[in-house]
Every structure is written in structure tokens, then in C-alpha cells.
Image (cartoon, rainbow, N blue to C red; front, side, top):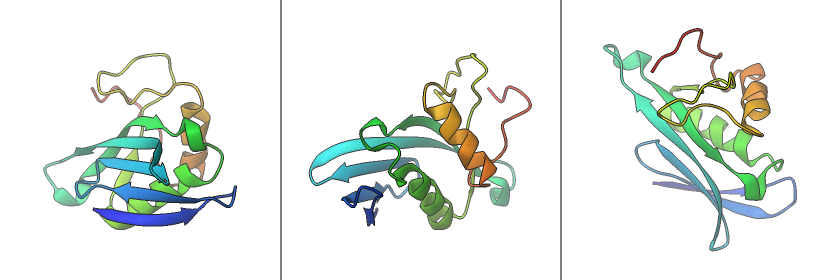
Length: 125
């Protein structure tokens, strides 16, 4: 487990916890859980091509504070892996990786900054 303190745009210090598997990022303000990001590790025939797919993005209590961006950047650094996400085409994915609400523009911004890989051109699931 990796625990990091992060000073957000609102000047509050949040505790961000990355589990050892890289599949869960949890954000706290004091003892109050502010949100989480869940990911699935996708293993391929070549371990160098393994990647993490974002399946749940729930940071509503702390959105627009730079926390989501920091979490994804730090995840890439800690786990040395590519991040992917679903699309916002209206189709629901069984793994929860479809984008809804604020998730679509946020992931769009993360793709522009090359933090998250491009939208898949085919249905992976």
C-alpha cells in the first residue's frame, strides 16, 4: 500500500491510498472518504503490454481540485503501466468502464494529456 498526501487546489490536504495491486485508489479528507477510482489489470501474453483499465471513477466529493489527474499520473508512475478507459458512446460495459456524467469530459482531458490511452476502436468486452 502506498499512502500519499496531496495538497489540492482548495488548499486542503487529501490522503490518497494506492493498494498494492494497483486496482484501487481511495481518497480521504481526514477520516472522511471522498471517493475512489477502481481499475482492472489486464494481463496479456507479454507482461510488458499489460495495462490497467479504469472501471469506476467516483470522485464527486472532491472533483475539480486536481485530485483525479494526480491520482492517474501517480498510478502510471507507481505501476509503470498504460491506463485505458471506456467510451461515452451510450453502451454499457459489463466491467463498468463506460463513461457517464463528468467522467466523459474528465477522461477526454486525460487522453489529451496522454495520461490515459486513446478511446478503444473496438469493443474489448
